[in-house]
Length: 113
Image 1 (cartoon, rainbow, N blue to C red):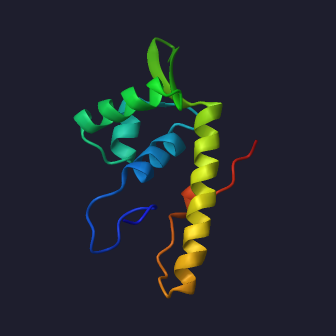
Image 2 (cartoon, rainbow, N blue to C red; image 1 turned 90 degrees about the vertical axis):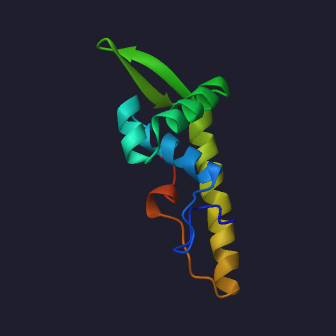
């Protein structure tokens, strides 16, 4: 299983990759529908992930101009940072073993806090 997304021969993304994608999308706050489209999730999948991420406080739901906005929490930002560090370690190890698959650049970016 590839921790930073599917190989070209794989169609499925791993759950940690999807979580990292959602948290990245919601870094500055975004609508539920934008998360759904940008993370390429079904409505059912989206609701399951949003429920989980808000319960474990990686994401928070806030009201802004009568709309519900999802925003990555400080804990969520730490998750993203740890995810990036692990991905970097695995990428380095994979390069040693001849695997050149790399994580998407937006998931390797360092947090700015």
